[in-house]
Length: 117
Image (cartoon, rainbow, N blue to C red; front, top):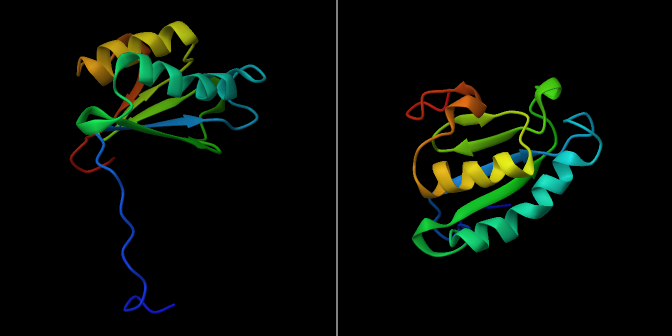
C-alpha cells in the first residue's frame, strides 16, 4: 500500500502508557486478566482516563518474566512492576500515574526513560 494515499494515523495525547501482561503464565490463573479488566475503571476513578493526564493502556501477550506476574510496565518512565495485586495497582495509579513517583518496593526493573532500555 502506498504511503502517498494512506493518511497518517492519529492518536489522542496521553501522559503514560500502561502495559499489562495477560499471558497464560503471568501469575495465578486469571489474575493478570482481572487486573487488566479493572484498569479502565480505576483510571477513570483517578481522573486520568482522558485529556492531557490520560493514561493509555493495553494488554500484551508476554514480557518473558512469568514468575513475577502479573507484570505492569509504565512508559515513558520505563518502570516495570511485578506481582501486581489490586491493592498494588491502586498504589501505582495514585503514587506513580497521578503523583509522578514510582512505587519503588514494587519495581523490579527501572530502565533509562531517555533511551527506552
